[in-house]
Each structure stands twice: as C-alpha cells, then as structure tokens.
Length: 460
Image (cartoon, rainbow, N blue to C red; front, top):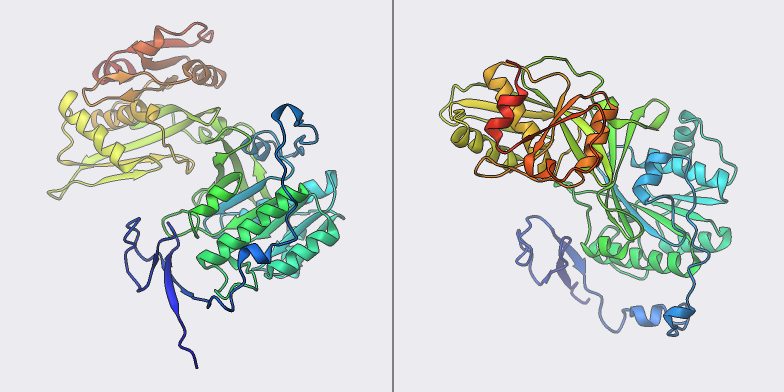
C-alpha cells in the first residue's frame, strides 16, 4: 500500500512546506499551516484538462468596439446595502461577505435574496451549514414572502453548478464557501486548495453567465476572512459585517469594491424582525448622549463618503499599579498611546499615574486619525472634571508636537454637524482657512494646537 503523502499550506499566504510549522516562514502568522494530501501526478486531474471545452474561446476586441450596455445595476430596496455596494448589484459580479459567527450574515443575505426574487427574478440560496427547514423557519420569523426564491442544502460544487444551469437565477448565494468542495480534489472542504478552486469556478460562472454570486466567508480569530489571501483578490467586492454581539447596531463595511467607493459603511439594527437599516446613523449614535457629562466628546468622522457623528467617552482615574492601564474600545490602541503621550508632554497633563479608558458609543470602529482631537478632548475633560460645551463637535489630527493637522472633506463633515443641531466645531486652523462655503449657523473655531483647542472646548 502506497504511503500517503502530505504537505502543509499556509491559509494566509499560500506558502507550502514539507513539514508542519507552528509559524509560517513567509508571512509570520501562527497556526495557519493546514495539512493537504498530495495527489500523485498520474491520478491527478489538471485544471487545464478539467476545464477543457467549458471555457469559451477568447478573442481580443478593440476598446472602441466594446459597449457597456446591459450592465445596469439591480436596484435594492435596502438603501444602506445599496450604498455599500456602490448603488446596487452589478450583474456578473462576485461578492464576498465576512463576519463573526452570529453577527447576522445569513439573516441579511436572506433578506436580500427575498428582495431580489420579488423584483428581478429567481434567486438560488445554497446553504452548506443549515437545512432548508432551518432557513424556512428564519424566513417565517422575518416574515419574508418570495415565490421566486429557491433553497437547497448542498456542498458539492458540481451539483450546485448543475442547479444554477437548470434554474438560471439572477442571483446565487453560497453560504459558505468553506463548506463547499470540488469532488475532483482530494483535500477536505475548507482547505486552501478547495477554497481557492471553488471560488475560481464560481468566478467563471458569474463572468460567463452574467450571474451575481454572493459568497459567505468564515473569519479567523483575528477577524480576517479564513482561507488563502488570494480569495479576496478573486472576488470583485469584499464586505465585512461588524459589530459587538451585545450591541444592537451592525456595520456593513466595504473594504474592496471594483464598482464603487471603498470603506463605505452601511448601518443596520438587529431586531426581532431581522436586520433593519438605520437611515440616520449619527442621530442614532447620539440618541442616549448625556449632556454636560465630563469625559464625553463628539467626533465628526468619515466612513467612505458618509460623515458620521459619534460620541467618544473617556475616563481617567488614579492607578494603583506601577504601570497604568490603557484600554481602547473602538479606537486604535497605539493611537491612544500616542495621544496620552502628547497630552503628558505637550499639554502638561500628567497621565503616568492614571488608568485611561476610551470607548466609542454604539460599537463603531474608528480608523481615521481625524478623531484624534475628540479623543484627546474627552481625556482632558475627564482629567479636569469639566464638561465640553454641549453644542460643540471636533475634528482634527494631532501631531507629535501637539499641533492640529488638516483633515479631508471638512465641509462635508461640518454640514452633517450643522444638520444635527451643533453650533460650534473645533477644527485645525490650516483647514479653516481653505473653507469656501461653511454651513450657516455653525461657528467654525480654528486652533493651531491641542492646548488651544482644550482651552476653547472646555466649559469655564
């Protein structure tokens, strides 16, 4: 009996090694090496021969002879999802949706499937993790009615492709790509080679037949989509459904989109009836704000093309340990360390003996440095035990010298702040000078340094 030959493939970068390694020698990730069975060459089926006769013969075409007709987007009644996708679903696109378990991926896609089925034609929902009865129970709970929505519980890719050829749907949802397998590959479902091959074949299907395919992807403990990194390069759009399971808000973030803006965000609320879109996220995030509370500041952040006003809370208390704690929830931890160092050195506000906690209300993750000023003002307000002005918002990046640096699209941010009733906004002075059309009723206060901004923002 021939000895079984195995190899180990990194699910992050695809590096192949003959022996198992706890840490990938190429990307440096731990615990990403997966075992794969090596198929002998005489029994293996090459991808070239496997796909022979199925691919149409390609022919170079002059650019002037190509028309963009027939690629109108499929409209979606759900405005937040349409925004993230760039204005609707592009026929023939391949979309990857990732998120933590139980965050609401299947619920959101089932709602999408029912909407598309009612408006545009048949939709095929393929589940490899749930039975059709389980999906039906969820549809009844969400009160979804769609005669053109077809359900199937299947993991064999060949069978799935046959269902697609018979049904000819406008949309196919595969939940999830890690449970799907190609039977001509000897490795198990979820392995690097299976995920890569199944995604490639579904890509061929979407491009050749003009069928939109949504793939659900599992995530690793670090929050990244499991499987080879090439999976995100194959698809046209990558969406992440984020949010704290203990909060009711969910954020659908676009990190890659060939048909629209990246970093676009849609906000949803998880209720008993499913995922309900939030038309005015800024108002929702500020609904429970306590006026004149020390340690609370309003940041005007930008998610894609959408300005959002969020409340940032900070608490500084005396530490009982030699090394005080720094806890960041919703902001970058290293950015918090930078801001505490600037406050200590440039504003003479010692924090070496205080624990500092920073939290973004609503479960939002702020990645841009334009929220630096609001974070620093919240910390300063907590230390001095003096609230900020109730009608004041702030936006600005802080440098290591304590200076306020310019931010992008300031006028868009200011219009959102004025719309929600704020009357003052602290901004970098360099950006204030370039304002051409500031909103009426909003006083724009330009400051050069963090110390000057603290003096202006705190209530006397």
